[in-house]
Each structure stands twice: as C-alpha cells, then as structure tokens.
Length: 473
Image (cartoon, rainbow, N blue to C red):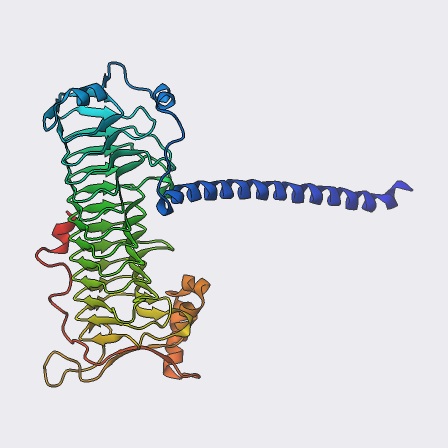
C-alpha cells in the first residue's frame, strides 16, 4: 500500500522524461532542417555569386582538370583537330564523340554532321572561342562541369563577329557565356542545363559587358536565366523559353530590344532591373505562377517602351517598383493585352511617371493594386479597355461617357496585408466586399481613374502579325 501514493510521482517523472525526449527530438529535427535549409541557401548564394561578379580563373591547373575528365571510349581529342585547321579554314566533324576542351584562337569555321558530339568529360567548359570571326555550326555540346564559380559552359565567347547556330547544348551548366564579346549571332540553338534545382542551374545565355549581339530563334528549356549584364544594343528576338527562372533578365543593361519571344511557365517572364531605354514588343508571356510569379517586372528602370505584348495567366502581369527612377524618362505601356492574371498591374508603392494607353484588360482577378495603401493616380491612364467598366457610350464614339475608376473596399485587406492574399478569392471575403459596397462604413480609396475608357476591346492590343495560339504551337 505505501507504493500507491508514490505512483503519481513516478507517472509525473515519466511524463517529464518523455516530454524532454520529445523536445530534444524536435530540436534535433529542427536543427537538421535548419542545416539543410542553410545548406541550400549557401548553394543558392554560390549559384548567384556568378551573377554579381566576373568569374575568377579556375584555381585548378589544366593538368588537374585533364586528369579529372572522363570520356566515352573511342573519343577523339578535339584540340589537335582545331590546331591542324588553317586560319580561315573549315573543320568538318563527322559523326562521333570528340573530347573537350577546345580553344579556338584564330578565325575558322567548325561544322558538324548530325551525330557529331563534343563531350566535356564532366569538368570545366567545353569550348572557348577567343578569336573574332569564328563560326560553330551544327554540333552537340554535352557534359560540361557543374561549378558556378568557374562558369562551366558549353561555349565561352571572347571574340567578335562570330556565328553560332543550329547547335544542341545538353547537360551543360551554362550554355553560352559572353564576356566582352560583341556583335555575335546566336541563332537556332537548343539549350538546356543540368538536371538541378532551378536556382542551381546555369544560364542559357549569359551576356556580360557585351554589346550588339543577336540572340534569335533559340529553344531554351529548364535553365536558370537568360541574363544581360552591363550591356547595350543587344537584340533578343523570336526565342522560346520555358520552365526556367527568369525568361530574360536585364541588369544595368540599356538600349536592348526584346521582340517576338515566347516565354511560358517561367517564374518571371522578363525583369528589368536598373535597366533603361529598353524595348519589349510583340512578346508572349504566359503562366508565370507561384508566390514570385511575374510576367514583366520593373525595378528602378526608366525610358522603357512596352508595346503589343500578350501578358496572360500570370500571378502578377506587371510589377512596378520605383520605376521610372529617372523622372525625366517615363515608361510607356501601349497596346498590351493583360488577360486572366491574378493582378494585372501591381505597384510596389504609389510611384509616378508611367503612361498606360490603348491596353486591354480582360478577365483579371484584380486590375490594379498598390501596396502600402497608395494610389496609382500619379500615372497617366488613357484609352484603355477595361472589361469591368459599367458605363455607357451614348454618342457611340467608342469612349465611355464617364471615367473608369478602381476603388478599394474590403479588398484593401488583401492588398495591404500580404498574408491575407490567400483569401482574396474566398466567398467570405467577396461577401464582405459586397456588403462594404452596399453600405460602406468608411471611405474607399481611389486606386486609378481612366478618363477615356474604351467601350469596345482594343483590336490592336497584343502581338502583331500572328495570333497568339499560332505563336504557342
């Protein structure tokens, strides 16, 4: 009998021990998660390092690199074939495996038959073009290294006036890496990166301090970015870019032209960051989804002309952050189609200096929002078509008799509180918004006013010359 009164004490002690073990297990699991997370952060940081700094020389010697490369049996060394080709001559590669690396130091043409594969041996870059007037045509580049700090690439370009067309790049970290390499043509190549998480892949085309290049009609799938840094007067035309992070990323890059590209299912279609006087015209930008999904994004960029683009089914069709940064260099958005986006235009703050005219806004969950309780009224809105306009056109001139206005009612909850965006399409929030409109207890906020709204859809809005469905085929 004396042991019975002590039983609750033992039970309490056992419960405490079990609780302590559970807490210790949770802490251990937590530290494990943190270690994994920060490990990924470190890898991501290393992957991003090459975005912000010129890559340093590979610390490994060429002899060490050569000792690490592994090639299929029977591969033929590429460099002796290049060395044996006379200046201005043609190196014709028959079907087979050719062992990298290859360094081209004088003008010549390298062309391959179907089945001609240059293998990188899994280490370093495959081919470096250090001369002007070089052509590389019809080759398959495969199996580069996977180190970001040395920018392991299929083709490293250091010359001018080169032509690189009809090549296939697969299982290579970076595709084309241009550094102070001007006036080249990169056309009709098929480019993919290594099978890695999105942030750890390499860029399909990386342009660094290189001007006047033409990047045209390439098929790019599952890479990280197509990125242009500190470069001007480049043309990016007619490319098809899918399942990547940034379709095209301009950083400190001015006076570039992006035309007729099809950017589908990327995290971000096009982003202009500290980039001025660029033109985006006739592009198709679809399905940029997820928490970071943006069709076209601006960060402190000025003087842009955004015309005749189709921005469809993105989380945010257009994202504006402190743009234009130069008050004397406004941005123009004209004849674009913003359709079925979560938010057609999202302003990070109540900035000014943008002109929106002759655009079509169709089926968007929200036409415009301004974070932080601001307004988009300091921008110019004129002649846009809004499918939510409920006015009349009594004189049949195609322009509404009253301005189109966007007010915030209960929807200011999800506009001002980011976490509340999860509920923005919930029936309960829609009901609160309806009640607020019927009998408001507070004054709504005016987000924007278009004094000349189109009553009929803008026929010219969207890409010119071809139907969107044909572009996507």
